[in-house]
Each structure stands twice: as C-alpha cells, then as structure tokens.
Image 1 (tube, one colour):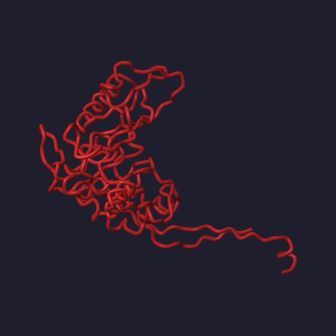
Image 2 (cartoon, rainbow, N blue to C red):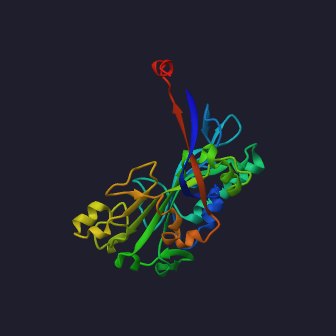
Image 3 (cartoon, helix red, strand yellow):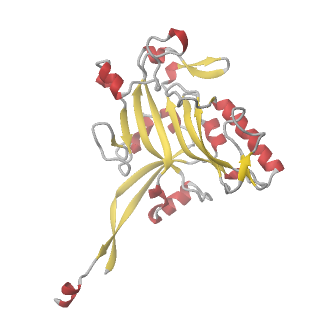
Length: 292
C-alpha cells in the first residue's frame, strides 16, 4: 500500500478576520445589519450555576459559573434587523444593546474574575446588507426606509460559520498570513442569499400578514405569481450540491463585492486563495503482487 499526493484545482474562500463579537458588530458599515450571532466564552460546564447579575433580559447572553470562574455557553443572539424576524419568544436586542451588554460583562470578567475576556469569541454570524438609498436615521440609529419593502428592493444575507476545510494542512500558511497569531479556525463565508423584500410592516399598518421573514420565500413568490422574487441562494459545494434552489458559492466568491459592497470595503473580510491537495491510497492485493 502506498500514498501519493496530487494537486487539485485552485480554491478560493472568504473569511471573517475578526472573532471578537464586539469588534465585529462595531465595525459593520451602516448599511450592514447583524441578524444573528453565536457567542461563546470557553469554560467547563460541570456543576455550574447562573451568574445572577449578568443574565437576560438585561444582557444579550447569560453568564454561568462553574466553581469560581465564569463562562458563557454558546448562545445565539438575535438582533432587530430589516430582513428576518427572530424565532418565537426569542429575546431581541439592538446592536448597541449587544455591544453595551458584552462590554460590561467583559470588563467585569477582566477586573473581578480570573477569566480571560479574550476567550469571548464568535462561532457564527449572519448579516444583511441593504442598498444605501434605503438607509435613514430614526432616534439616532440607522434604520431602513419603508420604501425598501414598498419597492421590493433586493438585499443580501451572508452567513459565516466554521468550515473544517480551513484547518487542513494545505492552508496553514495562508491562514498564518491572514490571521497572524490566531490559533482558532476563522469563520468562513459559506452562504449568500440574495432576497427580495416583501411589502410587510410592523403594527397595524401592515399591508399583509407579517411573516417570519421580511422577504419573499419561494413559497410566497409562487403564491404571488412572482417567481423572480424567490431568494437566489449560493452555498459552499461541500455543504450542498448545486440544485434548482441552491448554486455553488465557490464560483462567485471572487466577486462577493458585487453582493456585499459595503462589507467588502471593511477590514473584516479577507479572501484566501490556495491550491488544495488530494491524497490517494493505492491498495495492492496478494494476487496482484504475486503475479508481478
């Protein structure tokens, strides 16, 4: 039995260069809104109990304490945003409430406990970018204009998660260059949804039943006899093959700026290009060896 290595085609991916949840949310451009984020602060969960001072609804995450050192279990935080409504009964926060709450927790952990606040990081993130012409101010905060829904405008949802392919040996050098000193696997852009806003409103002024999403789903587009309003979804090939409802994301990674122009202008994203390696194992059976 022997092993051989062959070069594969050139591969491209986009990663989120920052894992600090506070830094990421604060660095988002005005036209990019957080939809949801998975936050985690490592620690054992054995024999833990709630940290009564720092828990929802006053804070975006619940702090727990095993023995004397607090930690935060992986928690999904839902934001008030223009694209998706949160799951039923979920606690929703604004970006400012999220940052203020985490900053207060991080300061307490650093000053009054043995916990390293640097261990607080993102394990997942979803954001939505809207066209700048639909951006306005309301009570000092950036919000979207009602015209976004009235004009069935397009917006883009981007999903970042960990992808095991980036921990492979063949991309270590590229990761060290992109994330010097960082030992954690970065979040990779694994999906893009190009969606069309639907005419829904909050409160009594709704023009139709306000759904879970504020954009057309495939079912809603068919019901409205407007199939062009269906989301255009791109996913990483490794997660899902191309189909009628999802296309390969790898083919458009190099032009993600077309879908996320404002986010692409920030320092949050980094595009990586590498050549993958495929290892193959040749197996020799006894009769083959004897016949040689």
